[in-house]
Image (cartoon, rainbow, N blue to C red; front, side):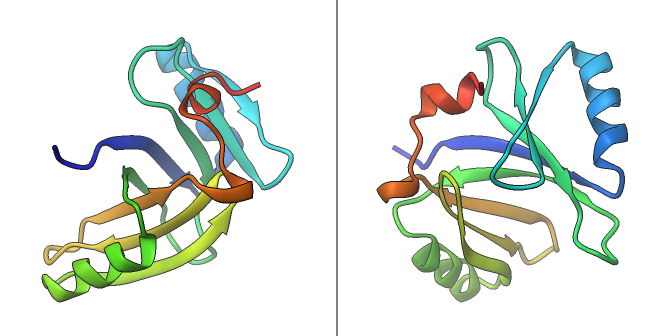
Length: 129
């Protein structure tokens, strides 16, 4: 069985504006996280969970999805061995670790592992408080 897609992300120059846009467009409930400047998206229990964050300074933003892996560092190394480019990470986040790579055509894809003391269950991600 292949690795599942488990998260989507919209990183934008105007996080507050994007919260309003996507909340209005899709009736998503937004939940700002206390641990970081990030907003969890609650879709009502259908589909995959996601979030809206701020793009890094000087970046136009992006939309990406995250694939669950056992080891983010190993996944980034594998992407590089197949012709991809490491963009970021691994980096600790409240629910585990993430990393980003660009495929050979430049599409940015995320890797995520939810484990250890930072871990959160998938049910918690699907229904942020």
